[in-house]
Length: 319
Image 1 (cartoon, rainbow, N blue to C red):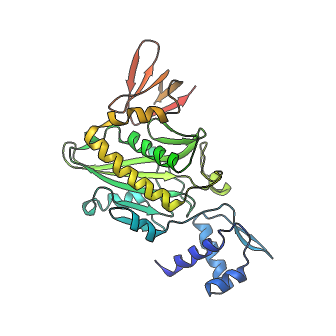
Image 2: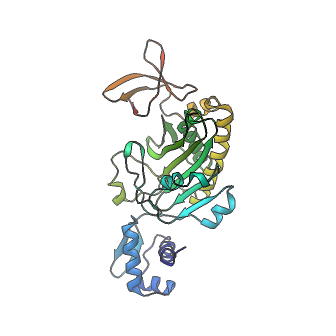
Image 3: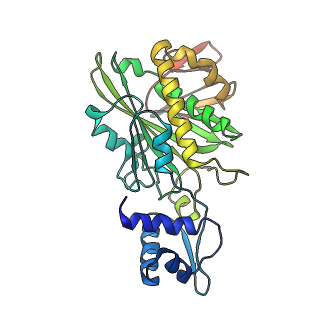
C-alpha cells in the first residue's frame, strides 16, 4: 500500500476513539511534521471524510468510520479479492478484467470517484464511510439465466444483515434494501457476453454505514445507515459474510432458479400485502403487492385478478 495512504489510514485510526486529538500528538505518533498532518487531513476531506478542526483541541471525526482489514478479508474468503483505497468504480474494474476472473471474485474499495447507481445516478462514495463492493459471477447459459438475479442479491443482503443483528431490514422490489423504511443499500447489476452462451455478471453493492451531514446533503432521497445501531457490524466481517452468502445463494440460483427464493423474498418484502403504485414512464398502475413470480416479476392484484409486471424502468411507490 502506498505510504501516503498508510499515513492517512493511521490518522483515521488515531481519531477512531471519537475524541479530539491534537495535531502535535498525531505528528508525534506518525513521526511526521504538523504541517504534513494538516495536508493529510485536507486530503482526506477532499475524499469525503468530514473532520472537525478546532484550534486548541485538534482534530475529530464528525461520524465514526472503519476501514477494511485487507489481510483478514483475503485470508477468510475463497477466490480473488482486489482491494483499493481509491478507485473510479468497483463495477468498472471487474468489467474491465472479466477474462481474468472466476465466479466469486470481488473488488472492494474505500472510496469511489465515479460510483454508479441505477438509471445513471451517482452513488455517493466518501472514503471509508460505507461499504462499496462488486462481485463477479459467470452463467454458462447466457443472459436469460440472470432473470431475477437482483432479487436473489437482495435476499442475500437481508440474510447477512439480520444475522449480524440489524433489525427493521427489508427489500423493495426490484433491488433496494431498506432500513426503517429508508434506503440503506443499493444493487447495480451489469453484464457482458452472449444472450445464449457464457454471460459475465458484475454485481455492485453499496451499503450505507456512517453518513456525515455534509455527504447526506448530496443525496436526493430518504436514506438510512447503520450508525445508530447499538453495535455496528464490523466492516470486514460484513464483507466476508456477504461474499460467502453470495457464493452460496448464486450457486443455488444457478441450479434451482428463482423459485428457491420466492419465500425468502416474500418474508423480506416490506410491501407484501400492501397497496402500491408502479410508475412506468408516463403510465402507472395500482394494486395489492402479492410477491413475485419465477421470472422475478412483481405480482399485483388490481381487483380484476393478479398480473405480473417486469421492466428496468419500473419504480414502485407505497400508497
